[in-house]
Image (tube, rainbow, N blue to C red):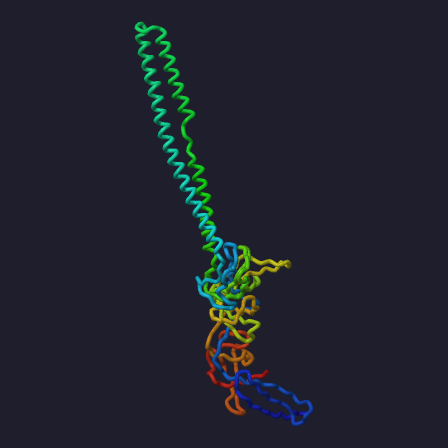
Length: 390
């Protein structure tokens, strides 16, 4: 039995992706064959080839601790307060340290004064020693010369006189050598210098503790944790505050070895934070870690670090994101749905609606496609209406 064909065209809003349908069939409700058609306007838009990967937000967070121990005197910031570099965040009470410093400075002055006294005493002793030593040396030299003269003129002197002169010389020499070896003053300057160095170290340590009784912000940022209270005795090991620093937001993601070759420095990417569904934020690749990450199954990944290029104050450290790496991209091009294009031999053909019930086939030349849309290089104009079979 020959079928009668009825064509019903339902016209909808001719917008991108908004469809209608055409029904082919006979006038019977039985054995009706339905073919659905979609409609699309030729429009301007972007086409990109991209790569998806999961990642995590990393915002630089600095931990601040006191470099000296003591009692907390003041906390000058509140939670979530914005701070600037060099702002004073918290201080320790330094009253006790300053008292100790005054005592240490006094002790240093005393040991320096003691050294000066010892140096003066030593100088006096060495002067007297040198004078006595010189006197004894003169005595034994005189006795030596007398003995030598008497020996030269031995016939003119009795033997007893020569022997006495020799004894006088030996006694004078012995007195000189004994005095020289046993009476030389010993300086205590080295021990004084050691005492001074110790006293200086104590002063410097106390000055350091006082200077470091204040915590200053090293960078602009936001206070995200305060872990101290006033009058608390705190050690240097305790983290006092945490500050989320600067306006840099980073994304860390791992890519398999098969994809890493498509990634390069300064490459554009978009991130979508799970907690902010539907909102895309632009980023760029700033580092590709060449050190592989190999899991227990032998799968090799490489860490990629991105930095947001769009400012966003809603993103928080640790948030999960989906990263879209842009491999190739064309902006503001004429594009149509891939499904609208059909291959006829070597030609690419689309059907353009020319009226309510009329259409024509047009040959086009296409460019980049992302699998959903395709760039039209020639053959169509923005606003042309296409009809195509689903």
